Image (cartoon, rainbow, N blue to C red; front, side):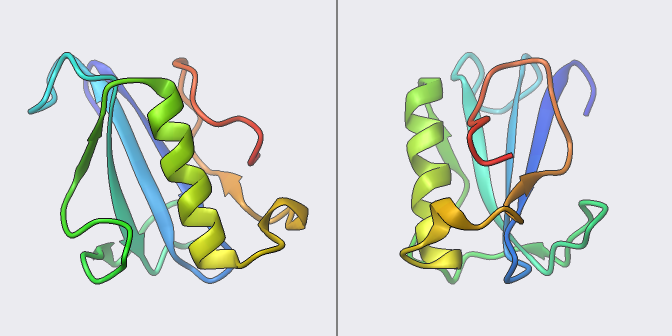
Length: 105
């Protein structure tokens, strides 16, 4: 990503999230744009965006780190289940400089 930060989160199910921020985004100056990914591999590659989950039918825009963190937690509950906090395999594949949910690493 040019001039910004991308974070990819992979869940044990292979589902994932892509969160991006930066001045070249469509919705800049909002803090984060997020999308659900399907088929995320260990190296962060995916089969593409997945609009069929209950999380969002499109890319979601957040105005604060707190809103983005809540979205990450909602995704973890959906893709991992009620014991998502005890699963250590939820990890951030690409780390950026900007703050975002670090408790899932």
